[in-house]
Amino acid sequence: MFLTLWTQTATEIISPLLAFLIPVLLGIYWPLYLLDPVQITMALRVGILLLAGLLLILWRSASLTYAELRFGGLLTGFCVLLLIPTLTATDISRAFSDWTKLLIICAFGISLARCLRHQRTATAFGLGLLVASLVSTAYVLNIYVQHLGFVLPSYEATRIMKGAALTAGGVALNPIASNAVFAYIMSIVLGPRSRLMLALSVPIFAFSSFLSGSRAPIGIALLCAGALFLINAQQSKILLVRVAVWVGLSAVAGLAAISAFYLSAGEVAAFTEGRSDLWAAAWSNFIERPLTGYGFESWRDDLVARLPGNYQSTIQLASGAAGGYHNEYFTLLAEQGLPGFLFGMVIIYNLFTSSRRLALFTPRSRHSQFLLFACLYLIVRAAIEVPGLFGYAQEPSDYFAYCFLAIVISRLSVFEDMSKGTAEVLPTRSIYGRSHGAWYANSGAHIGTEPRCGSIRI
Image (cartoon, rainbow, N blue to C red; front, side, top):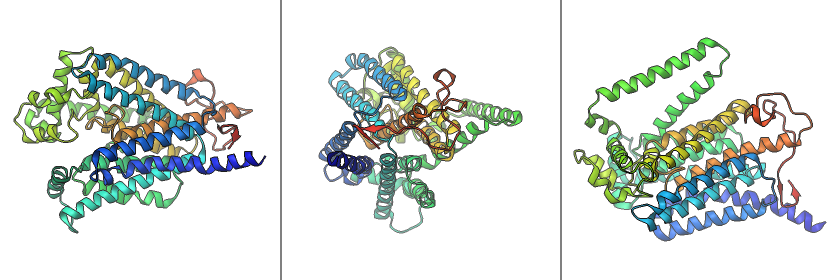
C-alpha cells in the first residue's frame, strides 16, 4: 500500500517536471549556442531525448489510441519511403545521417503524445512552452540592445542588425523570433487559462516582429488569423456568409495570380527577399530527378551554382548558416522526389484536418481555436523556411514542430479516452467523421476515464 501510494505521488511530480523541462531546453538552446555550438547542440539533443524516453517509460502502460496508431503509421511510412532517396542520394552518408535524425524525431513526437494525455503533465508542458517563448523573446531583446541600444527600431536598422548578428556571432534571429511566437501559441492550448497569458502576447509578438528584423512572425500571424476567420465563417449557417468566404478566397487567388504574371523576376525576388530564386533552383533539381530527388541536404552541392547571380541578397541567403531552399515543400520535391512530397502532404493534410475538427467540434473551443491557429502557423511558415516537420531534425524549430504534432495527437487521444469511458455517448458530430462512431464532442462536461501511468490511475 505504501509503495503504491509512493509510486502514485512520485508519478504526479516526476511526469509534469520532465514534460516541463523539454520545451525549456529548447528555449535555452540559442542563448547557450555560442558557448560551444557542437557540444551544446549534442548535450541539448541528448537531454531532450532522454527526458522523452523517461516519460515514455512512465506511460508505457497507457492504452494505445487510434490517433497514435494513425499518425504513428503515417510517420513510419514516411520514414520507410524516404529510405529510397536516401540510398540513392548524391552523398549517401550525409543523407543517411539526416534520415536517422528524422527517425529519432518522429519517435520523439509519437512518444511525447502519450504523457500529454495527463492533465497535469500537459499543463506543465504548456508552462514550459511559455518559458521557452519568454526566453527566446528576451534573447531577441538582448541582441537588439547590444547592437542598437535603447532606441526606437526602424526596419532598415533592424535588418542591418540581423545581418551583423548572424555574421559576427552566428545568431540566427529569424528562427528565434518564430520559435518565440510558435511556442507561445502552443502554450495557450495547454497552459493555465489566465488573462496574464493572453496579455503576454503583446510583448512576445512586438519584440519578435519589430526587434528581430524579420517580418515573418507578424506577417504569418496576420495571414493565419485571416485564414482562421475564414475557416470559422465557412461553418456559418447563413448561406450568404459561406458564399462571401468563397468569393473572397477566389478574389485573393486571382489577385495573387495577376501579380505573379505582371511582376518581373527581380521584383518577385525583392518581395520574397531572394527566396524565389532558391525555389526556382529547387524546381530545376526536381525536374532532373522527379522520382527519387537528390537526397537530404543536396542543396549544398550545387545551389549557388544554379542561382542567376543577379541579386546579392539571394547569394547571401543561400550562403547563410540556414542555407537550403527556404521552403519545406520545394525542399521535399528537390530532395525526396514526388513520392516523398506527396506523402509529406498526406501528413500535413491529416494534421490540418485533425486540428480543424478539434477546433470546430470539441468543448473549450476557444483554446482549440489556438490549436488550429498553431497548425496554420506551422503550415504557412513552411513556405518560407525549411526547419519544421520536414526540416533536418536538428534544431529547436524542428523539435517544436513535433511538439505540436504530439499536442494534436494527445488532444485526439483525450477525447478517445473520454468516449471509451462514457456510458452514454451524445449523438453529436464526430471529430473523426461518421465512420469512427459518435464521439463525445459538444458537451463541456469532462466525463470518462483518464489514461493510466503504469498500473496507477491518475
